[in-house]
Length: 615
Image 1 (cartoon, one colour):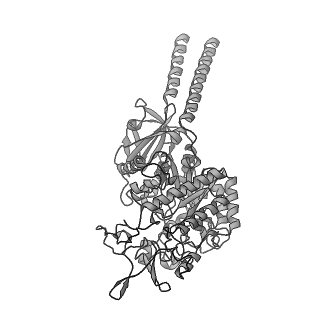
Image 2 (cartoon, rainbow, N blue to C red):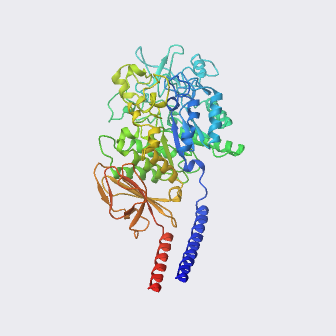
Image 3 (cartoon, rainbow, N blue to C red):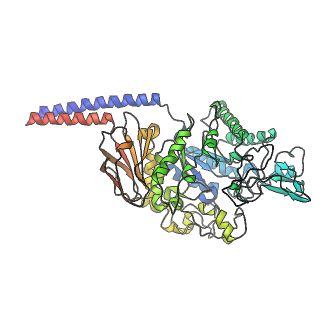
């Protein structure tokens, strides 16, 4: 017996040693074939809307010191890169996207010293800091615009000015271009006796990028913040940068009949022009050369552009492949292309949306997945609270960069109980409740729900700048941290799982297995595969996962993670050919690699031999 026991130990030791050598060799090969990813290529990017994140001084408005105080939340959540919506001096006609000084901190948010302290603390916690860059326009209170309107020779052409078009004696704008925010994109200046272009609010005049001095000014803004130590920029509304020099009327869009709606015209002369792409390529060269000259890590350029898939891809690389653009352009397909409540999400639509992005993506550009931001309804409000976990699983396990809007880690919802009288939202394109509710973005910007104290722990002020969602007593971070299961705890587990080889480097294979069930695998030869199965439907489904497996020989998988209300629990063994998912259920399964299977088979063979010898 002792001899046989010793034999067993010896065989297992040798087998384990051989397997370990094989895995070590595979790991070495992996690093050879897949060099270390740059920090932004595997980032979990977290967007903070400063006004709503944390108020440190009790004035009802979030601020920089509040963000600093909560950076440990980001670290605990596995976030190592954060993007801040604008923090610069602004009269707040568009809550910071109307900038009156690009190199000063808005007094609502603090001082430059506060920003430097935030940057220092972020560095200490190994969190990258990315700022918003808003090059298309300034505030009408910016010194440049004031001087331009005064016809100062140095600043006369800093903005887009055009003469009026007259029909008889009646004055009209130069063309039919409309503002994204509804209504004409031109405003008359009595002082200058010309119209100025504003593709957003009338308080946001468009800069003239045909003027080389303007390009130099805005590049110097980048240098100012790079010198301070930021890690990159998210570029706002980049596709509006240049206009066609003909200033011709945009042709009508026959499907949109509201003459003041931005989509009423096809914006072929006012958006997505070739020079805008070239400017991004030039800024990418500038950031790359800056990083090289200063011996720093990569300084990233991220672009925001609501446009078609072909145009979006050009922000990342020129069509001939000779010029690099943004390190990645935000992927809004999950926001813009999928069905929302009251319709049910269809698995085939999810697959098509994901495939479209991956198929168009230029070589060398990482995919990225955006669930929400400061302009679009939150996940829980678009798809329903029951699908928050599934959508978080989706974004965290797809290949590439995951982008999380603050509060999505706990499943916050929009709050539409906000009235015009409560907020006086200046960007609501009107002065009545109906127009406000139609155009306001306030519901997606409500304060972060930290705990169940006053104002969800956001502010001690009884009247914060926006009211907190009333559900904060039941839905807040503190409560989710101590709950046995919660959306936040699942989010933490997902972020930890992202370092798995299959998620960092693995191939992607997906199928719509039914109307509601979308499944995919992340595979790397020689390593365990991860299989994700998500039921977006309100009905139960039983599915066969073998179509997404790397090897169809596998019949069982081990539950790695599951949604908070799933019938499946961690370490459960499930049948891959008959997996049952209840409504809105979602699981991540671990499937043995070939190497592991060989080891298990060898182990089983040893046991059979020993049993034969013993008996």
